[in-house]
Image (cartoon, rainbow, N blue to C red; front, side, top):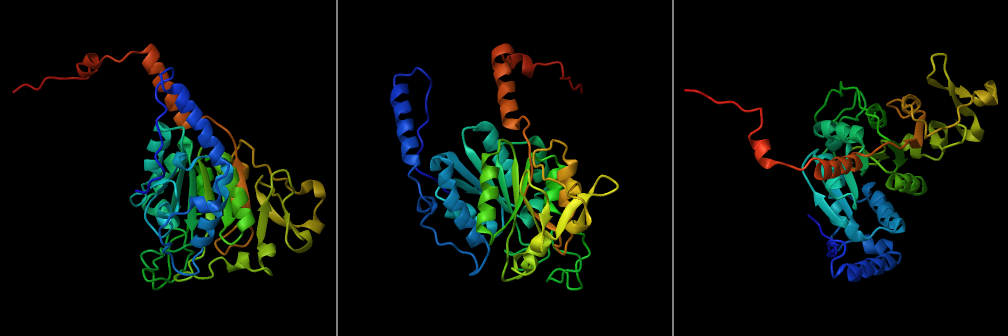
Length: 366
């Protein structure tokens, strides 16, 4: 468990110290605007392998979080198990290094009981999609107000190189010496299939693109999931070179900008159009009418469009959309739970004796 500076409880409205506390909160808010990236760093040695993509992600998060105007003591980062899950140690906020795959469940309890906090989950492709897969999909479908950063390096790094749920078919690893037989998960497709209200994808080395997606995710009300392609230079080096290379990257990356036509490639040579079944396909821009080119709509309520976008890419990373796939609004789990508790407290007073001696009881006879 990591901790931030002590945070005073606000107490009951109308209490003698209420005005003084309110003034203190205003002062904290004024001070908060002066936070900088260095204020988000701890005194802990960052212990990832030299060259790991996690360093870039950590630096990006530490740099942009102060701009959200949230006090450090109002942020909580919950992680599971894996290289990425060391994140809470390096963030000068509250945090918890929890157990394998269970970070979304723990974060759900925190976000539902403390809606005043900004709750984040940091997880990896093995942690989130293998042992934690069930927790992840239920968090997404409930629309709990938290932000999930899913680091995807397509390998188990902490346990030294076994194949993961996102490893490509045929991947040779210590646990698959003859090549993996499993078809990999597409985390974005999975999230959209669970009706997640915010789904994005970014690259660890693309500081600008990563920061933009993270900012939108943080400002979203509801569950935000951001898949981050993250290079493991020890056990899966170069996994995303096709997209990172200045020569091939523009050819195979599809930038997602809300309200903009889906045109990409050198000189905009390629584009996305509808196919005959209502899905999406890739076409040559000079072979179609401009009206046929799909204009990206991240706010479309029907998830089928965002899902079709996620299926454009294959495991070899050709035609990979990058950016925000979906960003829609619907009631959050924590807000609805708070409303139920309010109704229960004001309209349905609890009767403990009636509960204990309710009708669902029976007598066992000898």
